[in-house]
Image 1 (cartoon, rainbow, N blue to C red):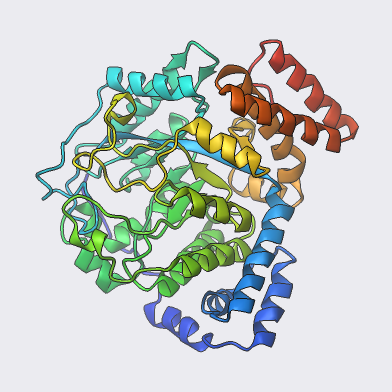
Image 2 (spheres, rainbow, N blue to C red; image 1 turned 120 degrees about the vertical axis):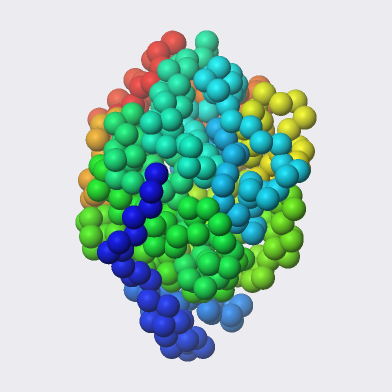
Length: 469
């Protein structure tokens, strides 16, 4: 695929972003409190307000930011958390990203691309432990175009387990394509297209990406534009924190989101904010040039929740279980669970090997262990895909979300998918705490919606599957 960057504008204004950051440093207590009072209305924040909160160092104000984010998160999402797993299809890559184990110069990495039979085997294993939502991950190599990626998606959707059916949503993390390539992915029924800019700072980007298609900053920057032009309603963006000053990259990420909303009427469906983790043969991955403390990271996540209250925030297994639990309370709405980061990993009994992984994983617990803990913490696991199958995506989803849809429909649908998990996959200990959670949640409800929920819960226990409101 030949990259055509003609006419692509750089809407990330480096000077303007640094101006926003610098002009909103050292804000007064009164200014911070004023922003937090506004944030409670769940209408979002300006870039200037976001920059102000990002740089608040006072411990008491930091605590106020986390507390406010927790209230907004609870008001919009309640105690529901979406779970998924990444499935690496190929680690062949022609890029030379300085921080990644998949870079083309890493001769110690074991390269592998799954064939259809191997994909089916991996999917069957994931289905048999309870996953319904997958993120397919691909190395960025020119030989992997839209047609081939679309075929791998078909293979996933066509793979049906013996327990309770198929994968119901396939999201994609692959190299930026042209509009026609994205259209092929849309036609095969992908959910969210995910692509991270890594860093929005042009000079740093150029230094870290010296080779491959990824070296073209503007081609990657406009990937979401092309995906949305191709009909993909839901897109997921992110920055790899630690490569550059996180204040700049977070403000730039939100500026990118604002650009999409201005152009297409809706911003990203999800945002991700992974911290740089060690990777095979990458000095920069072991020694991030801009390390981020846990305090800064928690504040950053809380501020994102306040800045874009209805946008999904995704946390991967790069973080340890303690950090993942804390971030659920202040902003995160989606978690990967039981993740393995190389092709063929789920069928590999010796999966914890650095010579095959893209990066080191911080939370190695299996899916059931993650579920048991979050349920004990009061959260309802969800694998719901009702909105995507009913056409409630993109701008339509955001309109519904802002009118309380998430609490009224996503909560009961989460309980239905969780009941499926308890019936088909859960350990005895998880089943015990899970049934109690469902019973407690049912007792809180009332009205027609509640009657429909109780009816469907009963039907699931009698053997029906894939029921939703």
